Length: 400
Image 1 (cartoon, rainbow, N blue to C red):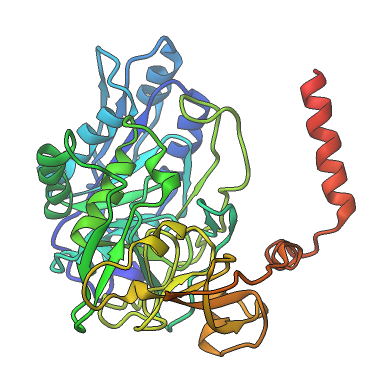
Image 2: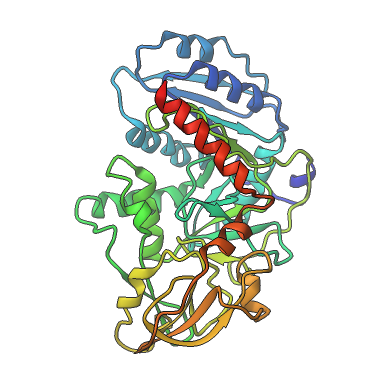
């Protein structure tokens, strides 16, 4: 396999499919898993089904023909709920050395396994890496705006945001989170700020985004993101996605949507992965690049307003903020919103009045912000008539 030619495969991760009550979704996912490429024909597949009233899910799992190794179907006699189910399935990483987890509303690239093996081998010896994502975000889920990681010459980027739409762990990576969770889940204040030394004499004040804090305690992902922020760890993410998300109707989704669909890698390749130290694309939990300006905090999506009240003690990067928000602090410099991705406007110092560099130690007049320009930048080819058509559709749906 092309992606594995130069990789010493220490383990073959077990594939764990997490299912509940969606037999159509499960059948679609399993079909894509079966047709994928594998380095050998002894790949273990585990289909774990949480208890529900839908007997067709178990039928689908048992009738599925897996031609690449052993298949195990595990039926839970009591309903676990998604959080506990994910935890139990993730423990297979400790049993088998590493694991790939796929929820049933996903669809995989033919090369997902090759990528996962290569990425796990790259990250297994770096304690700063908490896991591997198979999904590539093209949407900032906090701002509901497009996202694109800056091109730094590598096939990956790093993100302080755990993945739930296709993730892989080594035993040590999963164990690190599990041990933290067992000690902190009942007492951790997910929203509390954390002071993180950055190795250059500064501290960075980090928080978990408000959007994540509001997910509720049934979300395992919320706690994993808190763990990463507190311990200053990251996930390795691919430039081109190896999974995509159908968001089928289920326990946590009201109906199928397309906003999380992303292009899949359809051709095999040899990956060129950066280490965390080499990468120029390292993003915090807010989708903001930490490697752009060493003396400033980025808030280009405008979701870090809480940080303006957290300058902290001692030297802190949070004293200077470059934000799209209109804030009552002294404006040192301003930038335009023209280049893509967003941070390119700061790197290239594009003139304009869309992003403002604030000195948080000095009050000032809040600048004016044109929200229409932001909308036109984010949604290419947008026209007013499209908005009217969407409004009409929503009204018709409510009337029904």
